[in-house]
Amino acid sequence: MYNGGKIIAGLVIFLGLVTFPIYYSVGKANPHPSPSLDTPAINQMKVKHCVESRSFMRANHMRLLRGWMQTVLSGKGCVYVSSTGEKYDMSWDTCWNCHSSKKQFCDRCHQYMAVDLPCWKCHSEPNT
Image (cartoon, rainbow, N blue to C red; front, side, top):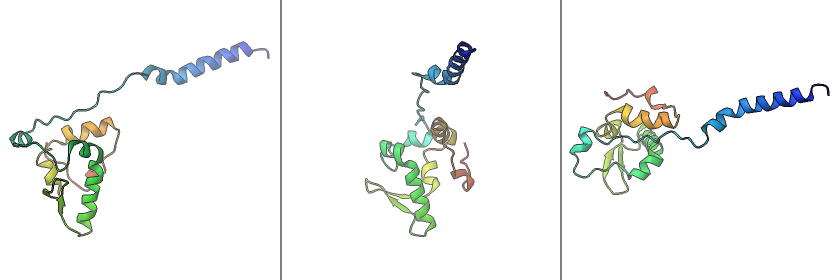
């Protein structure tokens, strides 16, 4: 090998450039979004609660919404009974009554998670 040193040096430089983004971002994290609950509808509530608990909604809100969609479209009903026994209409209006800002509640978290929302293909966005 006549140019072995140059080849090895070139490979080291190449690997360094290719892996630089990984090493550069180690230990750095984007701050988690924290949707503000400071909306007029939420501020008027005596007891601030959602359809389900906060931890449930953070982990399962999309499953809940898909379940609502399947239930309503199949004609099986349009009333949701929560784990506390309260009844809610399976409607976007149930959500938008409190979470009136798509930018504040939907977009922040979904952009952070890099999730594309299929909801707006059929539904119109709330007036924000």
